[in-house]
Image 1 (tube, rainbow, N blue to C red):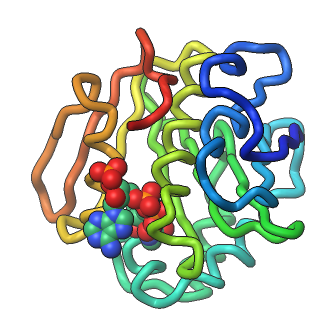
Image 2 (tube, protein in one colour; image 1 turned 90 degrees about the vertical axis):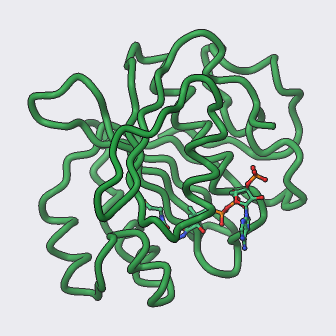
Image 3 (cartoon, helix red, strand yellow; image 1 turned 30 degrees about the horizontal axis):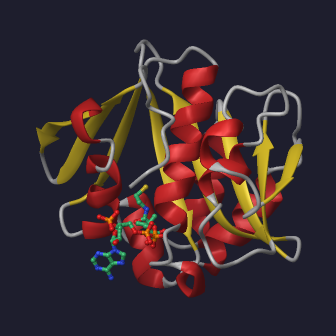
Length: 194
Ligand SMILES: CC(C)(COP(=O)(O)OP(=O)(O)OC[C@H]1O[C@@H](n2cnc3c(N)ncnc32)[C@H](O)[C@@H]1OP(=O)(O)O)[C@@H](O)C(=O)NCCC(=O)NCCS
């Protein structure tokens, strides 16, 4: 597990450095200096399921529904956690408690990965979800992954804005009951979000 204090580094001096100090890059202008970003490699570190479970259960009903794109509860969360094998997890912690999370999942038989993000209600609309997704994309790019997909409900304006914030590298790929976007990684995909 890698741990970084937020809000103290300039944007461009960290991506690609050996300590992967992505927090310094992506949280540098969020006025919450005590937040800590942790990069979890689930293949090496198995202590992520319980903090992720507790975090997901702290989402309010509307956020939990948006996260899973269907009405959800503790049973949904437990079934989900029993199944997933993420490629990577980014935990954003406040005083040691996970308050936001980006999960990157492999897609069986496909070359792309999927990213899912959740921010607890008290921390929403402060720029954290966007920065978490950009941090996850930057780390994916560093690992040589080439494409991320984002899925959300049509009414999920914030998530769609996040997907579109990758600008030319983001394109809608489907318009089913949910909105779907593909984000191509490469070039300056890790650039600081506007
Ligand atoms: C969707 C979610 C991840 C967004 O994270 P967030 O930290 O709340 O959002 P941000 O503050 O990063 O804002 C993202 C964008 O939405 C905009 N935004 C923020 N609050 C908004 C609001 N109330 N209405 C409309 N737009 C809003 C921001 O300005 C930003 O857009 P911009 O870059 O064009 O300015 C978060 O709200 C969440 O966890 N929701 C529940 C779970 C979920 O929906 N997950 C996504 C599916 S996996």
